[in-house]
Image (cartoon, rainbow, N blue to C red; front, side, top):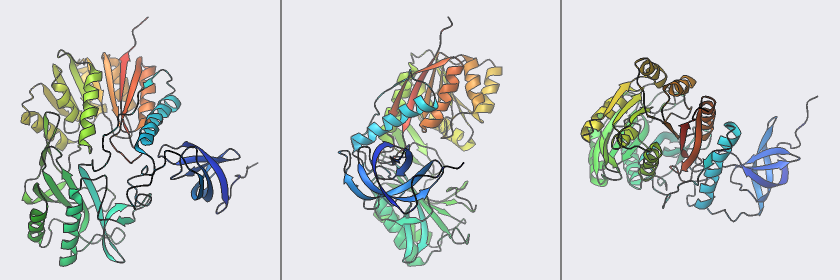
Length: 459
């Protein structure tokens, strides 16, 4: 017999918030039935209106907050509750760090089933604002004209904004200049439903060390009318501007960038440094968005690897070689593997740029290349993996175990898939001893983690 949920849509219930979901939502209960409540914090008591009821849980919103948590603070951004970028602005920063530490602990314990892993306190930022070196602004047409900003939570509806507190402040100027240009010259805006129009996104990159700035317009074509006027306006208003490019994206999908770049002015890359390592970055390059915390993240990965200068290191999912080149400063040899050919070309160029000769790179999916490496007898002392959000292919983990390195350093952007992968490593004889969260994304629920695994000694 189907059991009816103890809550009904549009009804209001008083509840105590006793926990938090993985995206920072408060969790309350009515007769044991879970209700997810955005912007609610543990310890708070609220009247909650039910918005949606499902079999196992419901969603609600705060109608009246009766008891307030000491971890609550007023969001600095007036759009924080509507915009999809900052889910945690209603929490003090100390509370955000505790939440992220607990998120990693919960994933490792509940998903990984591992209770012996020491999860250290999340490494936070001194100033968790204006930290992003990359911005992607969707451009749309609204009732009142052009809209440039960020998507609302769970939708493709643009929240129009001229100011963002987590992006580099130069983006405010870029958005203003581009908005004025588009309006003045009546440049057509891409319509997702009609699949017509030209301008889709504005992408910016800022070198925090170099001060170099790139402005990239993502367009449904290969030409921007009056592009020379935009270049002139950007040169006059944007300090450090070195690159204005078009990215051609004619695909009618949610993928932001297309494969082709057209130079309008300057060069097609910017240069920046993490620590002492210099990188050339194009619109298509994967490059961590928080340079200050990235340096901490990579230093932690190198520290966990425990390199003495004698080790052979395999770096899987290496991107443009950011971690590889950090590792190469301490290792005898580093081999980086990445599926995207353009990223490997960037990695080789970045190695040359820094005079690093002990790092080499191979193109291919990690699950394909690692099998070939094992057949070739490649025997790394240390393996570093920094997979995408979906985690590692099981074959990669199984082959790493066969290679029997002394250590595996797992760099993760998603605790749940990391925990799943750590469990498989454990079954294959590699024990995760510690994990350290690093706050790369202040004000959001995302967190990076560095986990250390060592091979169990046979009894």
